[in-house]
Image (tube, rainbow, N blue to C red; front, side, top):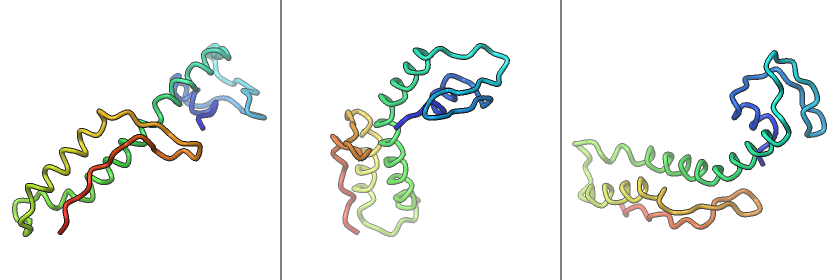
Length: 116
């Protein structure tokens, strides 16, 4: 769940407030305090972007785990299969992810890595 802190950082502020009971309690900054509607709009924007953000994190982890297979002296005979797998990972952002009630990614068909 995205909260007020994330929204304020997303609005470009870098601290200078106090949150109490899930509400903006005290504003210590010289700039004008954002309105409640600005904060809620930023929360909605961040929540809408969260599935794709999480998808990219997982995709990048999977790419990093297979980086070593792309070196010129990789001993496996299936390097072409790994290249295809890695391209499928890079293309996965064309899918539309969503989150279930537990915050887990759904609606994604992950490519299967080649057998060693």
